[in-house]
Image 1 (spheres, rainbow, N blue to C red):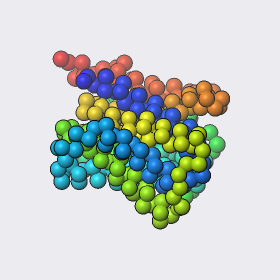
Image 2: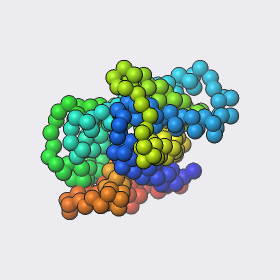
Image 3: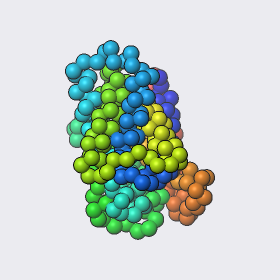
Image 4: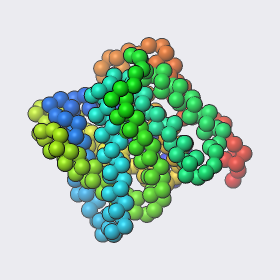
Length: 288
């Protein structure tokens, strides 16, 4: 698979996750965030296990351990994202969670002990400005929810970097399935500790939860490591910044939410940040 095809595949994942905000509004009706996390990833885990049960033939203690580690990170990033929205404005939560696009290059610089390429820096700055213009519509404030969203963004970036290391192996697909089960189990445990676990009470809520499980979780979190075998983590982070753009577009189409001109400008900057490396190739990148 070429890097361009891998990035296009990741764009479909960003589209799926952008639609998750619409489904979350319905899914959180009558249940707590940990309850939703448990159901969402539980459905995804069961589906993937049934569909690809033969993959478990290659299961080893090492693979299981990696699946547990990635699953814990997955649970922590969703804890920050879902719980943070309950304590702050949606615009502040959207901006802070999406700051993972900034954190990924920083983490890569620390791990590799080298400065990022100038094109990556420019794209990251453009995406950061675009994210602020797109999502910070109701003012910007730091509070308990903002802290949780920052935690989610940090673990989001860690997740991308860790997946880049793990996705290079042949066992990446099985690890992706295991992580879903771990995240679901932790969500269920947290639900029993801090909430009152319940099942969806309406067809609409069930539909939202199933969509989140199959499309946003089973598809998204299993396709990501496959695509990351052929794409740099910095590029993956930038492509993920398309998520709020897709969310805004879907909100316009299905919820009839109209954004201000400055918000559309932000979306345009994010899109430019993602396609810029494709428009401006360095000699090293274009060499055969």
